[in-house]
Length: 342
Image (cartoon, rainbow, N blue to C red; front, side, top):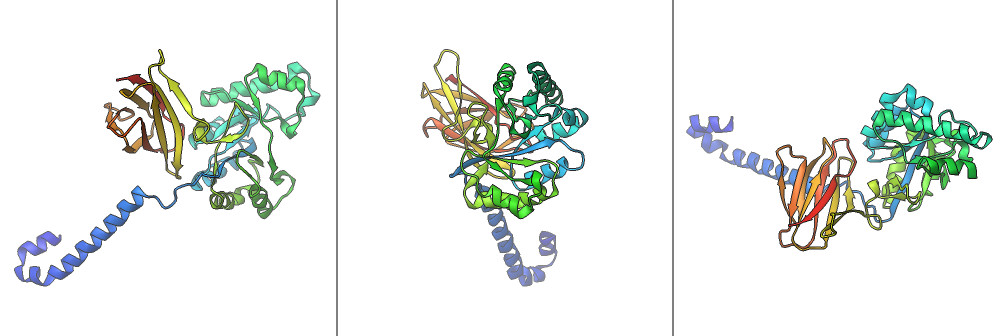
């Protein structure tokens, strides 16, 4: 529109020159500001103090789970949802919604009984049925189990081992089940330290209201919400990566090994770093999880397949470690990596 006005009226061109320049300058400033925001997000998560495990028991519930997931996602948090088998069977779409929202799903027994009062075969039935219904809903069987009421014994642990489950209790009890107020729940979460886990529940309005304040408190202490490691039972970086918890993918023959680890994360994206060992001439294949997209790379030369979901990275003279930023689009699962000698 400006171009049209300028081309049809020379006098207006002269009078509009300063105004056009001013508009152009404002647009340039706004564009620069937008570009700076994209490259240096102000909401970058600082996870230097470590990771904590947020857990919610007894879901999914039709009246609460969707709101809980929305609150977690809008505050950039991920959590482990310990579902009962009965609720999972009755609300399979909500179990899938938990996974789609970037949460991890654990086993909390079928009917929430006092497990230590059951026989071994009854224990097995409680856990096995829950494994099956969650796998049916999500495609993946849980690897974590939380015994109802935190009650456990040697027989139960033997059943867990039989099913490949790691028993997860907690370090901090929010007391939301015992009538704790939102302020008391927030105060309980403020005691969390690196690697620790807090017990909360799916169904309480006080817990839902506490989510934004819990997120703010964690940010203020440079803590991030992570996953619970099936190996250690402690909170670690999402998907097991990050300092001290790398995911290593060796190539058959041992000629090349790619180790992926976590970087910064935001509510809509996360950074990953890949270190290559075994050769200085390497080709690393990164396969994204749909609908993820890579929006930036560094210290390597990328190429893409026609689908845009497989990135091939080669050295560019900057060493054997490269990084990239993933726009997760609702899928927080890390891309897979493989390495071969180039």
